[in-house]
Length: 159
Image (tube, rainbow, N blue to C red; front, top):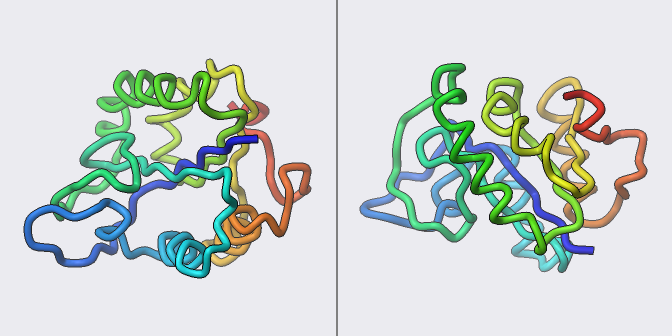
């Protein structure tokens, strides 16, 4: 069963000159978890990662981007809705059986429309605090906890 992980970008970024893979640019807490699983070859083999960026919209982890300093706010989320919805459908339909989403409340405003119309299982990583969400992310991407875990809720129920 193919899975797409949608991870929001992070404020914390590595300084790069020119362009670099998005996954190499972002250095926040969740990206450290994802990169460590990849380095240790423990990322679920049927899982792909994409990033919901405040600057670039929905991008692949390998997309080459420049360093930027832009926060996701309600206005930017509204501006991205149409493109993110289109990109999400193009990416998911016929390619994935489920989507795992790890984004904050403001980012949800950019992606919820697209998620609500997908004909796949969509899960949202929830938790009080970054540590709890990080632990759940780690368990999911390494296959240590399943989608049926009470620690994950389907996003469609919360839309």
